[in-house]
Length: 568
Image 1: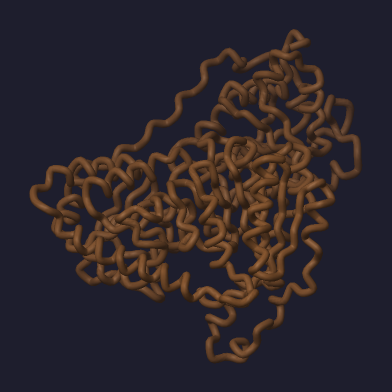
Image 2: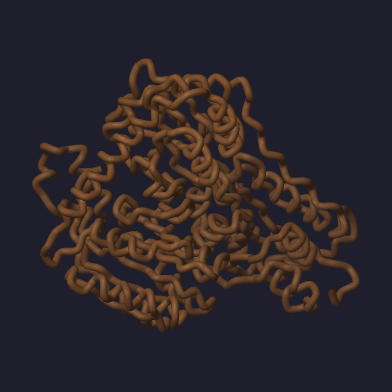
């Protein structure tokens, strides 16, 4: 550093770098002055250590990018935004992060506290209008921890605590407020950047006696069924599911999948729905699944043994969740499954579940063939047809973010952590920003975002396309454009199947016609674009788009005019 004594802003950036934080996703404001000065005053050594500052032109895009970057890197991410209005824009992304247990270090400025001659004191009218009695109160319900520093010497301890809490299981977002007066002050007291980093929390081991009981129940079961909705960013859970299935034939389903955990063609993979399976299972292993089934429509057998496994198998962040349980096994899910695999490997004789799983797999495959045969032969495009087209490109180097896009059934993901869908919080506009963050963190990957037209609008597409160009992120965006809030339309039809709304294809408050020219938005920043209205042209245009992102390293956007979907 050029200065003899670090300011808190310099200490903040240094400590983040020491924790391995690679990027600072930022949407800046007047409260960023000490950080901007720190970056501009830094020498090459400091800049190499500090997080790279990334200017992201909307807060929801910044948080979504951090979310996606974590999913492919398994490393906590840092986001900083402006005071209350900037933080308000970021909250939807934080809600998604909390639902998906993503360790985002959320930072925001704080309206200057002082009014007179202190460095950093108020200088503009908005610094009066933007002050809040409790800024963190906006987001306290969706973060694990929040704090606001008062003095420069707090910054090292505050960053350490933020990282420690965010990365301890169950992981999740945290918030730290940074008033600019203390950020601008020198760190003349308290901890320095040479203070040792705090240790990361150890993984919780599942209880051996609980695993022994569950293994006994599985061994006696005619049809044990494992439900897994969310893999982990490290990939260890998917690997553990695969190891368990190799040792013992357990049916695996991934209903309402958030992150897939098993290849679709695995002999034990029985699909992405509970229909016809849940009621027949006599032992259920529910792994990292906040909503394993919908209780209104499905009920396990009365004598079924049900074990919920995870760091928080009760999902205590949910105010109400009442799924039946015989066992709640706390601990790292991949360690629990490996423990079960070891116990089940000792079982003598052929497992009775093998023939049952094989029969259900055969039925599942026949159902997929029927779905393929049932696809329209005319020019209309459906979401299932998009899934079939994508299946040709899902190699080991490709990942997909599908937000109200195609379901994975006909795309048939070939490995764990290949297919991502939004967390159950439902904060719209997640798909494209998450894909951008994934491409930033894993540039070697081909990244595809498949989103509905409403999701595209909510993603702040002007900001997304500007970021793609500015950071050279060649992501393929496929818009499934049905000119409708179709999820809202389906909900109305499903709730009132015999009502007036069921007779209307475009009920009030769901119609998005006329659709804007989405390709114009993407091409404004130099991206390749195509609009497709008929299925005959879809495969050719997708192939061309793949060439654009793979060879020319340019972003590509395809606007597909698709039919509306019905059902749940």
